[in-house]
Image (cartoon, rainbow, N blue to C red; front, side):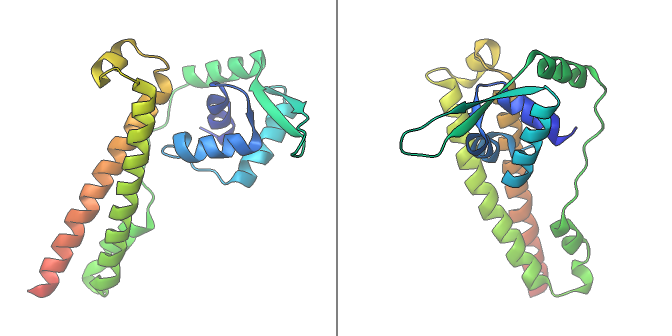
Length: 185
């Protein structure tokens, strides 16, 4: 997967300015693909140059003119090709796990503190993702939404992000507890 496909997928839900896309990415897409705003602006330029998105200028009275972007038919075809291609297995690449791996040979206190910080950050993300999921569902319970609600793709990716963050929280809390208890022995 590339940033190109993540941006195209994010633009499927409507027209966005670069700023709005960065905000949408930060909340909805960041749970599976992280990108800095500068990367998004560069990618928007590339996608427009390649004809995969189109941009239009919107003149605003009290603010600078902005450009809104939307996916073109060629962009939809690119996403269809991407969706049909085999996916590579995912993997974890996390510096905190390297620190935990080395904890038998280093001071555990800073590692424990970082585990606790990560747990707190994961809790905050779970709360944000829960709000997004509730906004999608409206008055529907989760099972009804999963069976009949729309859109389903963004909901499923948000649900996956929520479960990942909850599991990440639980693991960090447990690892910190274990390391703390072992250091007291």
